Amino acid sequence: MSTIPAISFKEVETQEEREMLRGIAEPVWRICYAEILSPEQMVYMLDWMYSPETIVKEQAQGTKFFIISCADSATPIGLISIDTIPNAETGGVELHKLYTSASYWGKGIGQAALNFATDQAKLAKARYIELRVNKCNTRAVIAYERNGFYKHHEHCLDIGNGFVMDDFIMRKDI
Image (cartoon, rainbow, N blue to C red; front, side, top):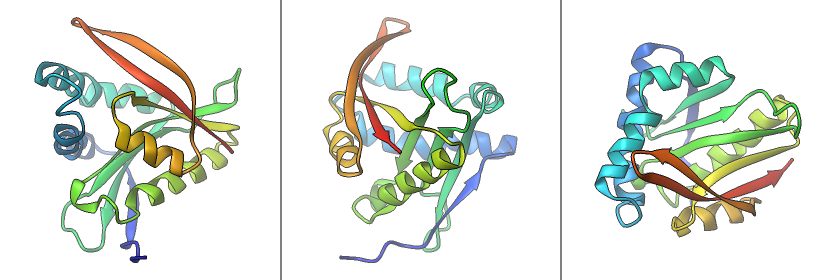
């Protein structure tokens, strides 16, 4: 078993950091969703999810964004965002985003990020973590299952412009 590289999680606080998030996510999206989403849907979703305005709004609602850095890289290697306020009715939090650079896949970074998310959920006194994952993103589904998540239900969401998000909602009890 290889050693997990030393990583750190920096909370996104500045406009410059918000603007970096799309640049971190986009190369990962181009690999993960190349055969799942049309190029048009990919651009539409990136524009929608990673606009600084959307990020500011989500932060105001209690979602924290973190840039993942690694000691052996001069540039960020990923990002994660998670709710910090549990749902009043269910007690759960949502893990909204988790992307790591492809060059770090298989090195334990994703698992470390999921452990970090679990720690954040525990700090929030959540009962569980929930996330959405595209039904066709088999690699991610397997990784989440390996880390204690299970398929809770399915959800197809119309996101506008003729596009949908057809996802598994996966859950990990804490």
